[in-house]
Length: 383
Image (cartoon, rainbow, N blue to C red):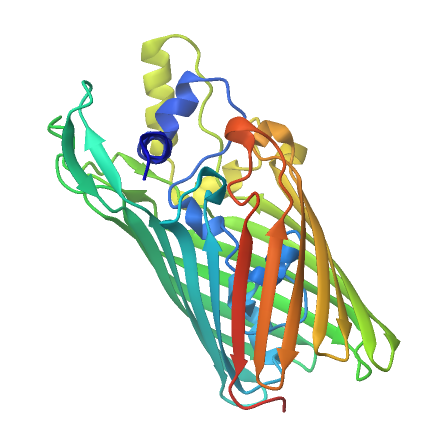
């Protein structure tokens, strides 16, 4: 890893550890959280459609979008793997997100599922203020969840998942400051509701609601007051599938997401006041923070994320996909287009997605010029 690349990663790491201090010192309209990798879409299929997936037809990666979709899978069981390079535009090869998901239908109405996400941040060399090497470390984060979902009727289902989160960004007293860092851990839950209005001919309207990462704060030191919120999220989705002819169909889908984390207080210029405001922000309970995220002074329009995607299938074997993601630029994320394709042959499927580059400098999307890969296996074919 080059010196430039190392400084880039180290800067990002510093942001993770002091995220609210940065927000308190600058007039930024950006809501920040710990373990942001939980909001990175690991699914290549949904990534090709602008990060859409709450109400689309279910597949092996349903648990990443809406746990309630799982019982509507046609196959009794399946396994899916996805690989997402990260910051590939900078020439990095050791920063990536890898995921593994699987499900098993207990009967026609019930299903269990599990998934694992692993985010590698490469290798970091810590230095002192003079640039002298101190120690090296390989920061990484992972989460594991287990879910259960059940049909409430022929069209409606409900699902719940429990998640364990581990974030190891540093270990020990890395800069001889007296502060000892350790891996941060947390537990969280997902809740999902899904309505599948697809008719026997394959056409119909579906919708879904997803609450993700509802869990405890996470900290990296022994200071119980120095903890950050994890990225709790509310998502609403709708999808409509139209059958063109016997061999072709097309789906249009829309997701709207809202991060259930309040923005950190804006800096006033008075150190005492800013310190008190930040302490009050950190002392908020997790549950109250979900509601305060709707009244934290950030406009609702700038805090919403919109994903619009389309998927065309031919003969249920070949798919073309495209999508558009939008969020107000004041949030720190630029809109982007994405494209992709899928191929399915009997029990095996492969999905590819590509994010069209947008933005520049620090606003450039980390997935620009990146090809994401996903493979899936239907273990017993369609029912």
